[in-house]
Image (cartoon, rainbow, N blue to C red; front, side, top):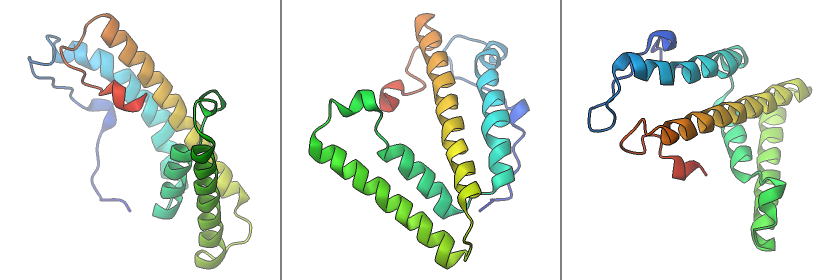
Length: 153
């Protein structure tokens, strides 16, 4: 799963062309580095320890995709809600079969719990990023929507 490429996330350079922002590289680092550091500490290290398989990553990604918050559920049709529930159940079934028949482990509850923590950490990282996006928009840091914020709403 690992490509063997090593990236020093604490010392990444943030270069933004002048047509996107007038900020210097140093100021850009001041904006971007806190989030990168936050993600490294809260998400990357737990992922390195867990070493999730492709199946587990697909499960986590799928669950995040098909989980509908209660406040949004009221705006969706019953058919859409049924589909989301059905897809979530399929994901659970696939993960169960993966652990039981491919990994041949019976007690996988703690591993699933760690996967759920990854979802929570990802949601926290997205919330922090949303705050950054709001601030950069408020202070007109970028000339273009560098974060493609509309895609993630």
